[in-house]
Amino acid sequence: GVSQRIINGRQTKMADLVKQLLHPVAIIWLILIAMCGWQIYKRQHRWAAINGGMVLFLFQFGSTTLSSSLIGTLEKPYIGGIIDRNATADAVVVLGGYVSGGDEELTGIDASGAFDRILTGIELIKEGKADRLYVGGGWFKTNDGKKSELSVIEPWIKRWSLTDIPIGTLGDSGNTYGESQAVKKLMNENGWSKIFLVTSACHMPRARAVFESSGVEVIPVGCDFRSTPKGKLKVFPSSGRLESLQIFLQEKVGWMYYRSKGWIRLEVLVGE
Image 1: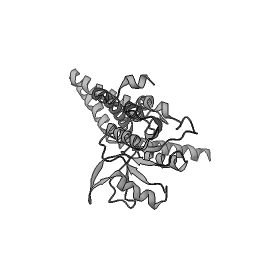
Image 2: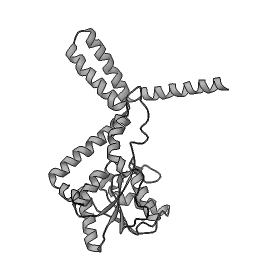
Image 3: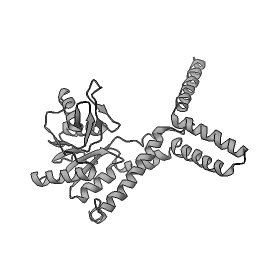
Image 4: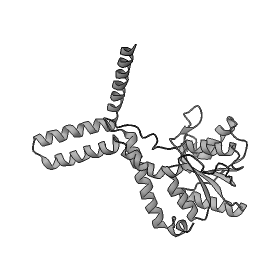
């Protein structure tokens, strides 16, 4: 009855609270609160202020939705997928970073949180948006030596018959700029006019700027959204929300670094 649903609801909330409390970040946060309280009691106001600042920082970015809002500023233009559903291009290019090793896994794949990238790329191919698929990514060490992301993902794609078109690689490009240069070379060699660019939505602003600064016309397709849904206020800070802050800062610092290297040219972007 109603009383049983109330009891079940309370038990669910309690279980969720316990899960939050078991996060290492939450434990550190509680220790900092205890230390701050002890230092106030001992009149060690300077140390209390330092620890109190850390408590507030962890709560602000680990418990509230602020981190989701920040990363949402990067993702917002790409929510909803392709703006023009009738758009086609010469190739689908999926940036690397979606898989690492996988020798221990039955699938042979150790998928990362960005695995949506390759799934989105395959979906575009299956929808007939392009007839070529290229994947980026670097090399990583496994029990059998060094492997590329392509060598890990291609057998899985073929085993499941997800697509019958050949899958090309951008080689060991190293970073987003290297991937843009590899695509630019392919465009010049094959006479392509534009590509679908697939990557995590939070990374898309920087990736798109790099590719377009390199002279590659792209149709951006963002995926791996982290800002939606934003969720609710948490009692204890979580590592997931702090990770969103880390990604936001990484993209902002990465933008400044790419600008300093000349890999992002604002005059090209503004001139579009």
